[in-house]
Image 1 (spheres, rainbow over the protein chains, first blue to last red):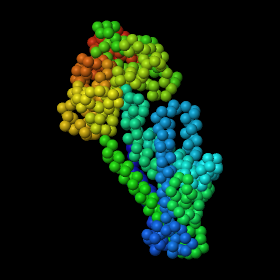
Image 2 (cartoon, rainbow over the protein chains, first blue to last red; image 1 turned 60 degrees about the horizontal axis):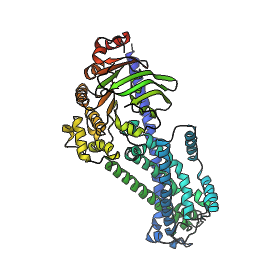
Image 3 (spheres, each protein chain N blue to C red; image 1 turned 45 degrees about the vertical axis):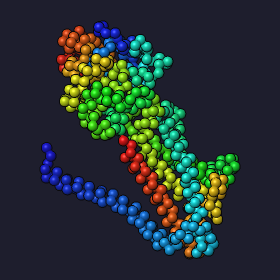
Image 4 (tube, rainbow over the protein chains, first blue to last red; image 1 turned 180 degrees about the vertical axis):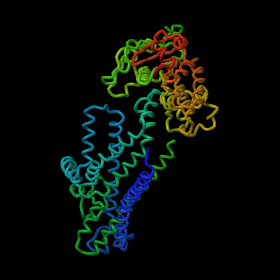
Length: 291
Length: 253
């Protein structure tokens, strides 16, 4: 039998341990949020004064008062749009093949292992790869398309892995139900698996895109320019991107440029938030529509 | 052996192994048309594996190896020339746990006919199938509701309706009532009597009373082997083999 008195004492201790653990977890959550808040406040304080329509519609200048972010904003928009266009179909396609069609053998395991490893490769390495393949071999120059293809390579592993996880989360009972009705595998995937996995896939894509929009190293590697006084008009045009422009301003000696960099960061964050919001809203919309 | 009807499904020395585990061994069984055949036996005796062999659903299990023959209307279904998609259209399956698609009741039933290019009115087809599955009266005014919003028993009848909508020749049922309450179970059993006028039904069940109530023929399996097979009455009242008797009288299992 249990000794009631001991049990009582023990219970108090267990409750205390529970409370402390909870506290630690809450503190960990707060730590991140508070830090982010401080960062945001600091940046907004520095950059707010420079954030006006003139800033958004002007090209960079060596005079702080006339400097703007137009070319970087457009560059980033082009870059992210093209990256999405290349990487989403390829990434989702690869994940569907690996999860729903490919046989489980040494070859697919080998591919799987490689994808997992590629997701952990530093982005600068992708920059070198992009420089060699797209800029040099394919002669695409230091253009939007080179940048977008390089970014696509960078985020493909993330998209594939996240999409695979979304597909894995669909129970096999749905697959069996569809196949037992005399459907082909593709009909099963198209009508039942993809609609159910879509929200999960979107989450992965959103994360990957957020990463792409903030990446700087591979773009510098392939030679995106740091001073661009025009908006790209076709895929073969040279370009700059928000993080590069921000880095450029932040590394200048004049103090005004540091505030302009802060304004640039606000624009980058707003773009990121808008992108994510649109993606999440359309995902939620789709989740409701599905049935 | 059951001979009043022509056999629609037949196995000849059927063996199924998962890796080194021989789940089903040397099964010779012929299943007559338009009747209910029950497969009974304790857990792990290979009855579900045998059932899945009839529409080649074992193929989704890695490392499964099937040897011997399963004939559907005289055709060996394991021959490479057999198209497994059309095979499954002719031999439908209802699973242990109700598994409606996360879509409307209408779409659940209409999907099969639609992807198989059914030329007629889907509306009509869905109504017919739901009527045959004894579900129409309960759902006729809410066809656009999610199939998952139904009760467990209704969900299972929806799955049966979905299968019927394909007009299969055989319906395989893998313990279709094991997740249901007694009243839902009763409704499904009543439904089975209706369905056997048109379809051949093979049902795997844990529940011996259920086998005794609904089936015309019963196969008793034990440790991967077919111990005894015959008219249900005989299996339950005058079994020839001692193991069968022990099982149906509840001495083990």
